[in-house]
Amino acid sequence: MGKHQVKMPHSNLCVLTAITFISWLSLVHGDRLAACFNSTQKSIDIVCGAGAMVRILKAFYGFSPTDSCEYREGDCTLPEYENYPCVGRESCSINLPTGTYGSLIQSCGRYSNYFQVEYECVPATVTNDICSLPQLTAQNGYISTPRYPNNYHEAQNCKTSIEVAPTQQIRLHIIDMDLEPKGKTDCADWMYFNDKFHSITLCGRRANDTYKTYSNFLEIELQAGSDSKSKGFWLYYEAFPPLPTTTTKVIGDRKKSTKQQGESTTSRLLAGLTDRSHNPAPMTQTATTTATPIPVYRDFVTQGNTKSSLPFAAIAGGVIGTLSVILIILLTLLVIKWFKERRYYQDKDQFLDHRNPAFRSSGDFNACKVEVDYYHC
Image 1 (cartoon, rainbow, N blue to C red):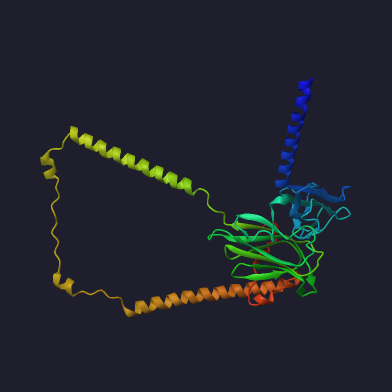
Image 2 (cartoon, rainbow, N blue to C red; image 1 turned 135 degrees about the vertical axis):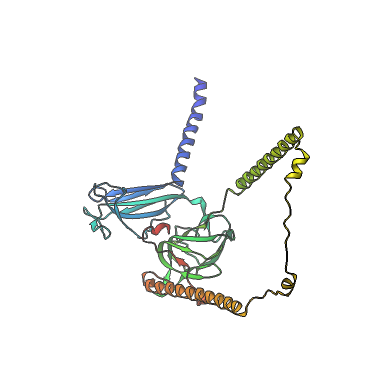
């Protein structure tokens, strides 16, 4: 009886460890929830648990011809870009539209009959405080303001920098941002990006925006000068393209292949020498098969007086052609830049955007505006 009582705590510890491991797996892996509008369910409730933060990867309305309550291949969908205030917290509740149908999906001309959310539970411990870590060199990571998702509520100025391999660039995903604005055209608090080529200053509210930099370096700065009640921001960055991981293996295979080829060649040479030692060829046969040299006559007078020269017209044509190609490339780049700036200013009214006066001449990051996959552009 005494031995049985001693084993019970060990058994309970194993069960507790298994539960903890399963819970940890649920934190790092994404999931999806969906509901039909004609059901009694009035909301989609996401619960990540203590020590985790809700990150919504994708949300959309969908129409199912078979009245399915979740996405099936062939369904027509409509992305939802709502900035949910519960993002970054341990749980999140999303209210569903009332009635049998939701929004009209223009691609198929039907009203949606279900709503789906794809999300991820991120451990709070993997998020870096922008004010506590001056430099990041990992291939990806999370960055947030102090006390996020709670209010940062104090004046402070801090920054961090991201630097990856020289052959890579950086994508920055704004998961959630809520910085105190000052009127409609100014910022009380702001977030500043700089990749040595472009810079931008942002404030207000936005979510699921992606910016692609032009270098392997990115500086992020928080300027908070007010006693704000705003959440701050939560960012995710990743380096692209991924670094190669098979270089050592390829080199090893090449060395092995080269070694095998060398051994094979040596074997063939040794085999040839062995055959000749057993069956030497007669000397007369070698003399018979010797090729007779063919005399070559040269015109020494003509050869001595010939001078190779490149005509002036060919040189001038090459220079003019090269300059023309360079001019065409420059004009093409100018047209592309003008088109991007024109499109940016046409869409500028859709969000609150303010440039840092110290960088008045700098351009914006390349913001992704992909309709098909807005959350992973």
